[in-house]
Amino acid sequence: MNAPDLKWACAQAALPLISEKMTIGLGGGTTISHLVDLLSQADRTDVRVVTPSQTTRDYCLQKDFTVLNLQDVSKVDVAFDGCDQVDQHFNALKSGGAIHTREKLVASMADDYILLVDESKFVDSLTFDVPVTLEVLPDAYSYVQCEIQQLGGHAVPRKSPAKDGFTISDYGNIILDASFAKFPNIASLDQKLREIHGIVDTSLFVGCVTKIIVTSPSGSKILE
Ligand code: 5RP
Image (cartoon, rainbow, N blue to C red; front, side):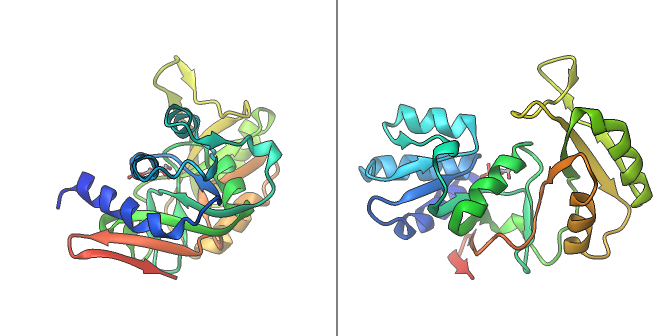
């Protein structure tokens, strides 16, 4: 099985977890778009969708799903998302999309927050090949960079490929990518980062993942 097939199989394994008329969270990425396709093919437009991703929102609307505005929702039955990496303790890193603040909001609303990954993303411990992404208030930019240095890290603004400048979040904040030489403890790193004034949220997901669907050529398994 190649990588696209694994993602498709992973989305298929998620489908039975969606009951009739549920309000579901759908994150971003290719695996989630497969789940949208599968729901559409199964004529499951009875579900109502909440999403942190503009791309997923547009795709769901195109497929005739009801998409609710985040501000009108306080509870989600189950939310599905992809990630860059997740470890055996259910700590995840979701840096790529730079929409982690909104993704974490949907995760918090959900009774169940389920990550869909192919086996390459499921690791013993997060390897931090990708940086920890920080959404930062514009006025706190220099201060946060300095505080990250105090923690033994190095934070740089993410360049925007489209514009000749920084990547700006949907909330108008600056996106910084922070690298750390060593990571003694994921939960404590996340806590220290979130204690820095001006950091809105980090791309470390600690204590929010309830299940992981891991797909390999031999099949899919649900970890909980
Ligand atoms: C970005 C993410 C995305 O959810 C993730 O990258 C999607 O992965 P895939 O396209 O393999 O489903 O967390 O930070």
